[in-house]
Length: 154
Image 1 (cartoon, one colour):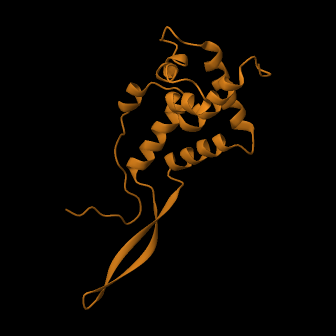
Image 2 (image 1 turned 60 degrees about the vertical axis):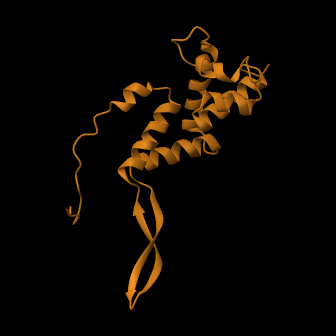
Image 3 (image 1 turned 90 degrees about the horizontal axis):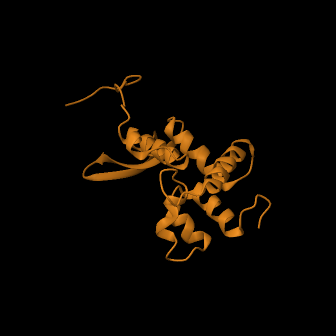
């Protein structure tokens, strides 16, 4: 048993769950048997009969720790997803441009993440915090506001 009263396997499950957001994948990586893996999502869902409140409490506690620690892989994932969701992350894309006479040239361009990528990041964050996926799907995205000199072409 670990210092929190959890087994080493349960501790690994918690860490992998926070890193991946997927209970089945976390159970597989933590070393649970094939029979247990399909039940893993039920362990952390209070509406299920196989709910394990101590695992959910440990996940919540670990998430709080990650908010205050400086170095942790899971924290880096959470910070990246938050940054992506807020539109603070940019990505490099390759753009091919014509240079005349049937020739083209590739160059690297930096752009902000798309709205779809930002929404995906928000869904991943919500998943890690255990928010209901049905509620997430029904989020009203509201109006789209274009900033700067952007124009819409037909």
